[in-house]
Each structure stands twice: as structure tokens, then as C-alpha cells.
Length: 211
Ligand SMILES: CC(C)(COP(=O)(O)OP(=O)(O)OC[C@H]1O[C@@H](n2cnc3c(N)ncnc32)[C@H](O)[C@@H]1OP(=O)(O)O)[C@@H](O)C(=O)NCCC(=O)NCCS
Image (cartoon, rainbow, N blue to C red; front, side, top):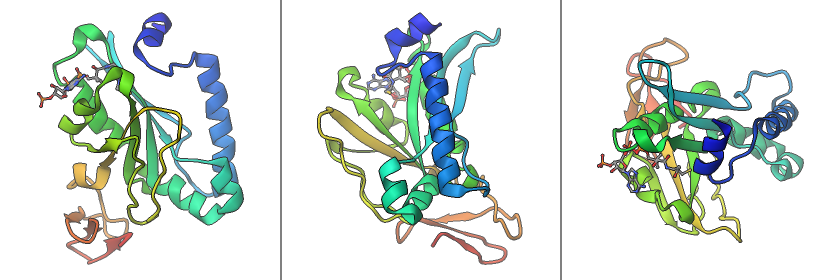
């Protein structure tokens, strides 16, 4: 599987490097959140057939940055709470073209929601030319080598890193998974109000989420 994954995933890292990366991110999350509950260092989502054979997968990670933690700890906490990164998404070649990639993206966005998450941000390297896949699967795709726009509640743009060629995209998981998010106060299902950047409103107790 490792050989196949290395061929399919641009930027593939073997398990020992992934584990080291996870430990580093767990330490960053402890610096940001201390003992408070916080997002997992990574979430792996798998797609399999009826016999349990793996067909594809996705990896979701919280947005953490050492620089932000040192310089602006409050912003680091807000970003780590609200933004997740789609670190990988792949479907085995023989399983492509039947909606598995779209389903994985949707699941990845769903798993961005716990602990206050809203956005799933990602980057497509131009070598695999699959920005259209994201566009057709419900993501907002921005221009080539253009960073991500400011979105509430962080309200800060995310710059493009110089030196890599590609396209950024994001999924607003509140929008994509509206009807599945519950009000923390009364547990009724939030409504997604599509104005002023989009926000959640509880129809029962009127509580807005991060307005
Ligand atoms: C990109 C990838 C995940 C797509 O998976 P998939 O299961 O074939 O995609 P789906 O069948 O769910 O396709 C969803 C939509 O995207 C379109 N699409 C899929 N792959 C596409 C591509 N490479 N270019 C343009 N459009 C694509 C499909 O036509 C479909 O659109 P439609 O329903 O409007 O016709 C898969 O090709 C892959 O693993 N590629 C290699 C790794 C990679 O590029 N990962 C993404 C970047 S990190």
C-alpha cells in the first residue's frame, strides 16, 4: 500500500514521518490550547469496498503555525479552532470516476466540524491538474497561485507560499453540512443563514454561532 500511496500522492510521507508530524502537531496544539479540549492532530478517513478493500482516503489536520503561536497566540488559537487543512485526498486509479473522491471530500469537511471547525482549506499542486475535481465537488476554488480570502471569524487572508505552483480551495463545512449541526445550548438543528459571510442560527433559542 505504501508503494501505491507514494505513486499516487504528491508529497507522500512514509508512516514514521507522518507519526513524527503528528507528535509535532500535538505539541503545537498543547501550546495553543493547554488543557482545553481541541481538535485532533489528524483525522484519517478511508473509503473501502464491500470486502473492506481500501479504495481511497483523506487526511484532515488542524491549521497550526509556529510563527503564529509565537507572535499572535490568540490568532493561532482562532485559526486552529476554525480552520482545518485537507492534507491528502486520493482514490485508487481503478476506483476513480464513481463519486468516491467527492464523498471523501464531503466526509473530510464533516470531520472538520468538531471543536469549532468551519473551513476545510487545501491546495492542489498543478502537476495533478485536479482543481476541477474540487470545483465540481462543492469547494470554492480561488485563482492560480492566489492565497485564500479572509473569512469570518478569523477575518485574515492566507497568503500563497512563494515557490510552489498551484491552486488553493476551501469548503465551508457549515454550508456543505447545514442541517447536521446542533445548537450547543438547546441541541436543536441550526439553520445556515446565507448572508453576511454565512452564519448559523438556532431556530429554537435564537443563538447565533460565531456571528
Ligand atoms: C482527484 C481524485 C481524488 C478524484 O477522485 P474520483 O473518485 O475520481 O472523483 P469523483 O468521481 O468523485 O468526481 C467528482 C467530480 O469531479 C470530476 N473530476 C474527477 N477527477 C477530475 C480531474 N482529475 N479533473 C477534473 N475533474 C475531475 C468528475 O468528473 C466529477 O464531476 P461531475 O460529477 O460533475 O461529472 C482522484 O482522481 C485522485 O486520487 N487523483 C490523484 C490524487 C489527487 O490528485 N488528489 C487530489 C489533490 S491532493
